Length: 484
Ligand code: ADP
Image (cartoon, rainbow, N blue to C red):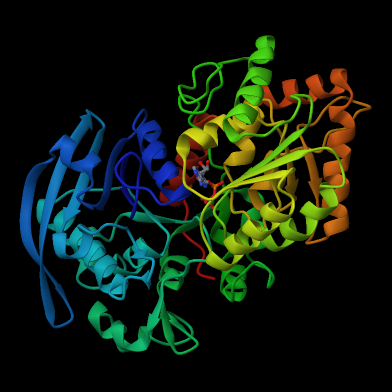
């Protein structure tokens, strides 16, 4: 099977979030049983430049009345994995991927339209054949439509398309005027197709024209067809539910494993949990927290955005601070929420530390040192930290939504099964009760060790997800897609 994987970011080349983790790892695993080509923009990052990929094509891409120069660089990773970079420095050699502190880059539509058209022209010119074209998020969502339209349908139309939605909160919505740049028939700019309340919605192209639709957890796939999680696309997604499924992301345990993690001061395993305790003592020392190591440490490692349930957290923390705990928040993002966290940390100086920065080492150290990880997300397509935390013997307390619902099982002391604690809805009392349940078991050494063991034994490695993706591709090749 020949697979083309299109993405706007992938580790280790360029990353803003979970999409990069998935795009960097999934194609590598797929390449164990298929021929995989990954293609992404060349952001001229140090990681790309150091590898010096070879120039294999130079051409011009037409978009509307404009023409833009494109160069394709190629990196052969193995016999079955090739990475291509689409180069246009005016579009991609910028400090950030999608925008800076002033907001999104104003030319984002044309940047990613160019990227998609360059990919199509390149594979058409080179006569490359793909069975599956796997697109991700709005930046590549027009490709399933282009592949069904002239002139690309003639050269490339046999390929089946799979479209992944990593976060429905980002749809690629632009003013109506830019539609002309696509060269597509005007009839496609209508509410039935790409129009969305008078604007162009790129994600709609992927939803309507792909052969298979997939999200990053089964529960999120069910949630997005309902109004409260559908971001206005619930009706359309409901129409195409017949081709929609969810596959939980995997974890790269070569990066997230307390036995070999280079970022943590004291490596440990379930059989040497005293190492975990040492990480906590060392962390309290580093942060200047004058507390005994038996004081429960709760942490949150997160982008600061409405999605992550910061409003709920701000109401929850004063309740939690009635008990003897310490809470550390590591994260950056929305300015207003950040200021409110800062104010709270000032008010509860003895109980809370706010680390307002992006710090990979600290993210690992907190996972290793903490007793409890909080994730009160309003919605969570998959979520990774709750999965990492289990491997580090840190018990997740989560809102039961999306991937959090799928990856955390409520602990039952009677059967001694389960990996964490869950609550439903934006209910402060329910969230506080879930944390209190966790703290009650924390006081019972035997039950807490059982909880830690249950989590540490869970296996969220990519192997299972990769099998599910291969099955999905086979299904796309075998079965006619539904038409909604
Ligand atoms: P999302 O992709 O919605 O931001 P995920 O839980 O899927 O959320 O993934 C977030 C990733 O980013 C995790 O690997 C997490 O450790 C990391 N991360 C988030 N904030 C920070 C931060 N301030 N410093 C270091 N790593 C962070």
